[in-house]
Length: 294
Image (cartoon, rainbow, N blue to C red; front, side):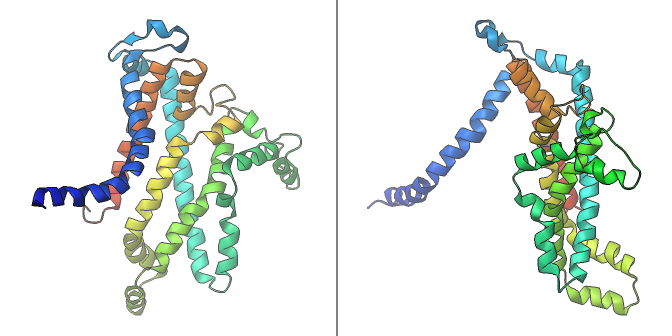
């Protein structure tokens, strides 16, 4: 058998195994992305498909002058920044607590991980009941300490903090688990040597543990940042962007433009902008977490 034919047969065998997965991957990722990019350069209003036409950068020019877009972007950045900072801080705190509680670590870890086991849709409906100003459990418990009643998601000023509270409760365990696993892999010899040299606990944490955890922490922060930018079900079920537009993030606004206003061209431009923002944030996080670039 000629050598080129044999080499081709050796290449076709693994390719035949990979082909179905690659076809599915391209169909659900590459094709929709390509369609979104092309649609973002069109004036595409769904009820008037016949008038669909190419308008160049018209959608992006409109986006720059859209006050509602800039408001949604600001609320998105606020939501991501506040939720991520608190989740990282709480994740570190709980992980350090679990490291010290060696006897109860199994029980505590299972209890803490419970929020991420529950279906997100079920979580949001339960929290919707808890946020009720008249029948909710939160206001009931606050009444015992002389606070409230609060309006929670029914107030433009309180809605965003309430949604951040739900996000923190549900997803802090993910970061905690990643940080806890990272703490278990730290070299004990380095920490013991620092203790012998007289280093304080704060010095050991900031000078030894935190730098060693940076690559692992980067993975958790990266996943959470992407998820926070894409968060939709929490906002849609609890507030639908309201009251008014007080909790309308970029993901919610993109959905509203595309599926409520039926402006698929402008909605595609918004979706692409959100994708580029996530891509830029991911690049910065990976660059920070790569110790070789530091």
